[in-house]
Image 1 (cartoon, one colour):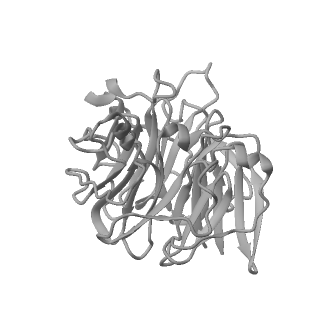
Image 2 (cartoon, rainbow, N blue to C red):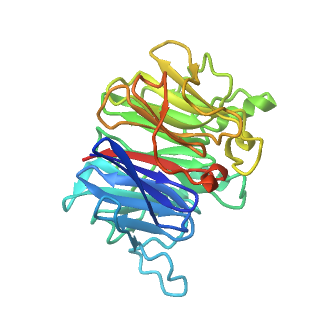
Image 3 (spheres, rainbow, N blue to C red):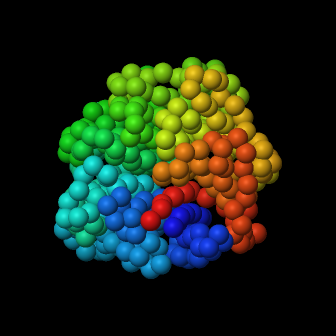
Length: 362
């Protein structure tokens, strides 16, 4: 059965396909959900981050949820086995690190810290050395320049213990020992990665959708799409065909690592202002060495559309999904043509910024 988890601005939507029809249920109502991940060893086991209400876990594919990590005990002594921040900004579960039957979980917060759990979220280790990196003093999130956060976590699907972490904004960093030690940002790499993907069929290849490309509006030689073939040591920027370079989301075909979709906007204002008529966004696709191609067939009008979140089917070739304030859409032909998924869509959703989209099948 296909399951989809939509991190909305004020809830988590759980969407399931049953007998050819889609059913949507609201969970974590009233919470600003930011990220969601499933355990590859137990796919009904889910983790959902919220901004202000901490980290939540489900053991039944999203039917029920319970808080974990104890972020709310601000007046109590911190015993170094929880997550002392209520702003969870990223979560990921490793497919190559397993402990006690569970995938190792990583959770990122605002301000930027990273936590690791080897017991399914019962206890957490603070990966403190992340905060000691030389670049840390320059990390700053433009809308709240006094702080920063872990925007994205990508455990390597082939190399156990290797993971990549994007700080918004300021660095893309790497660890090869499960977060105990870190390599700081590399010259030429993106500083404002919003989404980072890897593919199990191509070792060491990184795909970064970043906000760095907005610098072009100010005459800087920066790039929204960044790609590395050597695990982040060096970078290239195949962006021919892109009209807009402020990138948000990226998805890679489950079977073909050279079929890539991205979402793009002229800049952060047009990308994220769900309550403004300035919203403007696009979806592009790329195959092999061909230039990027803007796709529109079946998608909402770009004007008034908040920059979308993209996801691929975990196993099926050519199957992609797109989530924005205009609804949930799917494509079965590598993103060339799209159709809406028929679920109830509240008018309030059209004025919200959706944050994450997870697709699982079990």
